[in-house]
Amino acid sequence: MRSLPSGTEAVVFDSDGLLVDTEACWTVAETAIFAAHGHPFGPEQKALVIGRTVEAAGEAMAQYLGCSGAGAELAADLLERVRTELSRGATALPGAAELVRACRTAVPIAVASNSPRELLDTALWSAGLTDCFTHSFAADEVRSPKPAPELYLTACEALGTTPQRSVAFEDSATGIASARAAGLYVAVIPSLPGADLDHDWLGTSLAEPELRDWARKLGDGTVR
Image 1 (cartoon, one colour):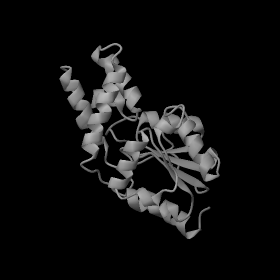
Image 2 (tube, one colour):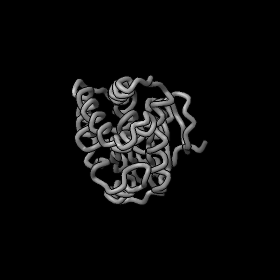
Image 3 (cartoon, helix red, strand yellow):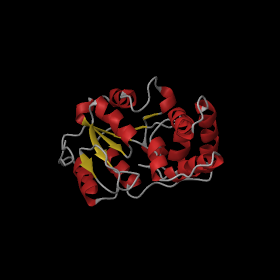
Image 4 (cartoon, helix red, strand yellow):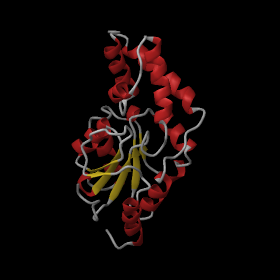
């Protein structure tokens, strides 16, 4: 595992399961859909849908549940259920607000999320992070969301830097594939315990001391 890069010019964060504790909302919705089709929902099933767009999750569920052609219907059901769960509120994950604000003092930052704009805005607002970001990009605002690189390439372009000088923070294989394809350094905090994920840097929480130290050095100008 490599150390976090000292020449970072921009930082791009995923949202769901990385900055905001929304995976519980998604899991409640996904569990209900699987139960309605007579199937349990556990880590194996979660791995099929985590990090995907609503549409891609619907197709993955349809294939797994043996409901050929029902992807769009399942996606619509999932969106409505997640919307309901998220309306009850979601909190920032440990260390998220502190890391975001520390990075923001030194370099441009953005969010690149595979959620639609509606859910992304709700999640960031609920977690008190909306004011931290002047740039955010949602799945329904690009032609090819994650795992394609477009979200990360769009974010880097908007921040005025190259992917090779940027760090992506991710939690899922889908998001990691997107950041990797775009050429960013990939720092990973897995949402699913025990997941074997591609990474340049791997941690267990955004509150890890190493991240705080790295962000502090960016902020005081000793690392550029």
